[in-house]
Image 1 (cartoon, protein in one colour):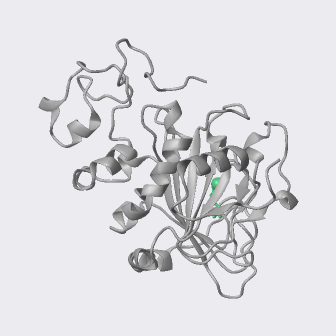
Image 2: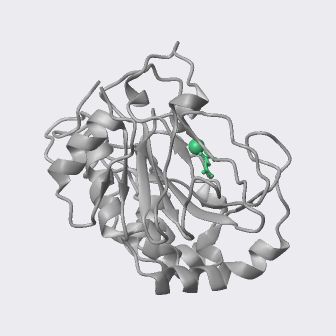
Amino acid sequence: MAPATIETVDPDVSPDAVDRILKRDGCLVVRDAIGHDAIDALLDDLDPYLRRKAGGNGDFVGYRTKRLHALLSKSGRTPDFILHDKVLEIMDLTLAPWCDAYQLNSNSITAIGPGETPQPLHRDDLLYPLAHPSERNACCTVFWALTDFTEDNGATRLIPGSHLWDDERVPRDDETVGAAMPKGSFCVFVGGTYHGGGRNTTADEWRVAMFTGFALGWLRQEQNWYLSVTAEEVRRMPERLARLLGFNLHKPFLGWVQDFQDPYDVINGYEELSSGGGDLYADGADRPVAGARVKVV
Ligand SMILES: O=C(O)CCC(=O)C(=O)O
Ligand SMILES: [Fe+2]
């Protein structure tokens, strides 16, 4: 049985230990994974947008919660959080076994203000009608604590072990545990883990998170990046980031452009270097199959 706490580890935790904890609990906190200077620089860039932004207008998005999107166009510090080595190492464990390349699903600020009520408990993989439980994760979410997360200021609540539940079991509030963690930490949970934003009972504290979701490369992404960043922004960003956004050919032949070309080549004007259909087999495969190392479940 999963413990009624969220296991917290240091950033030097081994991949084997992360894998064991996530398979058992479906969630984990990595403490103090990024410096406060990176967070403060990000928040400085985002502050004018957050000030202007209104709260939400529904139980799921909240009423005293501000959500900010298209962060890549608002702060040059955003990639520090998306491309963080430990985050990608964890995605290599949770998503890479079932696809040729995982991708970015979402990237938003969720700032929970004083007086906010709890968000309904949900699974982030509810976007995809796939049965639970499954050995395969459809998606995996990271949320960065850009302020301290406490039980009082709206720390996200999770139900450790709920990724193993079937689709009939209904989550209850009294089964949740708050992801209390210091600023600079992140919590990661697989798509089947029930969770929801917490209640903020403070008088004047905002709980600010950056949510960064990843999904298997053959699923439709939650956010549509093709219309969220300009072609010029894609050309200027690191190749890894552009490919995570979906400017990528998922082997063997998903997402091609024009003459079977890789979108990354096309957007950069490298069409003439692109294979145009010559190397559409997945890496290591000598026939048109999903890929030598991709598990089919
Ligand atoms: O803000 C939070 O703590 C949770 C947000 C969330 O889970 C969501 O919007 O899907
Ligand atoms: Fe969620």
